[in-house]
Length: 144
Image (cartoon, rainbow, N blue to C red; front, top):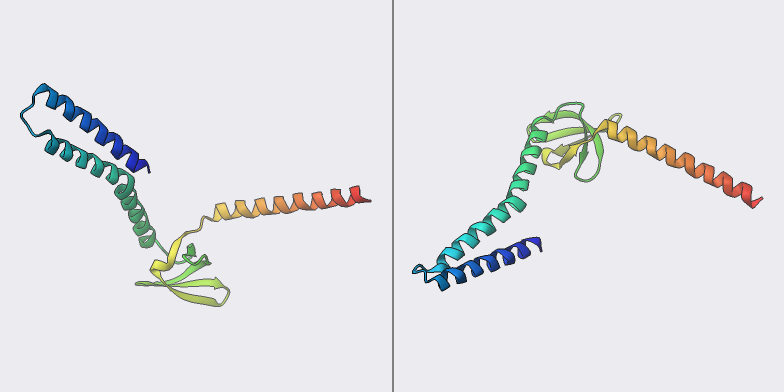
């Protein structure tokens, strides 16, 4: 939607500038020039909104896959949390629990899990549970 609004604004601007040149008596064909400028503008917008961010994500993913090592805590594309036990070419052996190892394709790894963020989430869950227990006690005492 943003792209179509920008293209419409660019087209209107180019059309107005072409009309001004035509009124001034320019001998060139303004349609060809305007079309070329408009196409370049659309390509530039497309580049900054689609291609550049995608290239950046691809580079980050390649760095992640290249830097993967034994002991890293990861999450697979299916949402399974595990730690890397072994790496062989395109196959990664993940340890899900003590004595439970599963082989995955390297491409099935979604990303690294930040242990600090996980600790913070656990702490927040405990705080919520403590708050809920207090609410239950208040309800029980008010009901009596």
